[in-house]
Image (cartoon, rainbow, N blue to C red):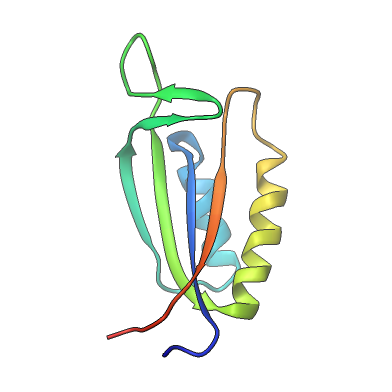
Amino acid sequence: MCAMMKMVIVICPELREEEVSNLMRTHDVKAFTLIKDVIGAGETGPKMGTQIWPGKSILIFAVVDDAKSGELKAALKQCSLSLYPGEGMRAFVMPIEEIV
């Protein structure tokens, strides 16, 4: 069992990659994974990387301690306020049961 560890998962527009990556570094998250060319649909509509449904997303996830997850949630919420209409950003926080 991992005491008080959380996985923070962020889905955001690909054009916000640098901004969100820098946010992670600014908040001293030394290890995270970034996956590019993510497609799907959500509240802001389909993002399929096509002419009909342009745009793609990125997915970033990091395992951090509980206190850091709260700090990241607040920073990501603030970051989402700068999004343009039609852009969407979601962050999810899940407990980590075990690291092997």
